[in-house]
Image (cartoon, rainbow, N blue to C red; front, side):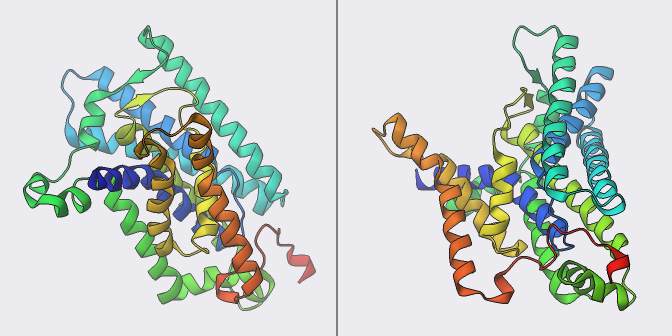
Length: 325
């Protein structure tokens, strides 16, 4: 039961890890993208559209194309969302909080519109789309994992996107701390006026970090549909995972490597009520609140300790006006 719990916690946490890593990259530039939930939703439906069109055009799917087409579709959809946010907040200097919330509403609306349209095209009796062949390609695991006992079950029994999520988080941590451009990105997030005076292109870093962060967050939606949900798309089935990803950013104190552990913790807290026998409905709902409660506690602690390395970027959520430099 413990092994099964750990496995389910990791699977639950991978979409959150994608979303939080993408949001950390975005926030390091000073952009506060509260539209992560919408970006993940669009990433998921974009992958579904690509897979739906491909499965409908062939009798037998090619595993490489079955994976590549949804990934490219997800990248395109998520990139468009990142460009919309960047154009509004960086070029037009719109309020970042309002823009992010509007992007969430827009993303969910786009996902439900195209999801509902595809459901009508299939003439399905159920309000969902099933992409079993594509999902099987995404869910493929290492063939020798079952022969390694508990070690294989806990560490090697997941699809390739799970390991991609962990690799991206580790690479992001290395990029922020060990590369020149990573330090420049952090400088833009801390003090864009000083970075601008030092010859760093503030707009370029904000655009790139937001777009790259959106693409990574979009992979969270793709993973949820193709792996966790076994290729089944239902409107509004994604839940509050986008907001949990934002909460995980705070829990991880803006460190991508810490978000790896945090995503597993959050994933475990989301399903722990299923492993407690005799738990009442009210008790289940209280346990579902624990990720947010833990985030609030972490936020209180880091605010009280006032350690600079645990604080968000100084210019987070603030538009940069070069004329005021």
